[in-house]
Image: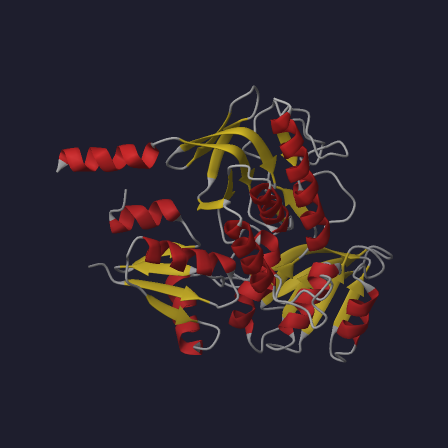
Length: 319
Length: 78
């Protein structure tokens, strides 16, 4: 029995080795996996959640070319995953604990095993930035959510405050209309930052309210969220908005926390790359939302994935 | 056999991941879609204090989110 257990353990921790390990199975990582598979590079993608990453929480993508009626975020991701697998890329569902990226042989430490690689593409993406206001820790997961697509149904017929007015905020605001028509947006800038077509669409819901040029000062309540206090920048006045749920879309933080100091990051934690998407380390590339760039979209992530895989192919050929 | 319940919504990626993980370990579970079952949604909020999914219940123990280490420990998976 003990022997069997030990054998099982050994099998689990048995090291695997690849020519390329892609960390992150969002649009960038999956596209890199498609291109690398077709280049006959022995490739693994490591994904902690499900294929698609952030894009899997987007209910409907309307701007991805080729889908004139739009495509579901999860649906597109699943198709990309199947496509990558078809060309021989392996997908491993596990979390990365740490990584050794310097030198010829890279090591990716997972929860239960170590994977070796000749090259790495970092496509870990970003997570929603947490709101910092009085009460925000107390009500995290207890009325404050970062994913209306996930948790929206728990707030049926409730009063909703959405913080932010960029694409994600407005898209999720439109999604939330199916559960509630009492939706108030609070945005620090004095204007909406979402695409014009999304602005038009949210404004077609007559009951939707907007407080622009205002910040969230506190989220209040005893056992559950009861209101949000905002401060208007123009005159310093404070307004209390009754609320049961608060959905937050105030930008993203890159997922680069588990990398060591050898990998160069900018002040916000994003990875700077050259035009071939190489990082400061040989054999290590970055693609998608995790790298320093202006425009973070599914299509720009996919494009990054293709470029990074192409760069890896050249790197491996020249070794 | 442990009694396992997963409170989830169909549009939540971490819920999908949690269910995939349980299936990959051959663990039988009841999937409760709180997007349609309002009573179950209230039950989940009451039990967990959470207004977010997934919430996983294993023999009466509540796990908030996809916490693989806690799932493994409650189910005796190594």
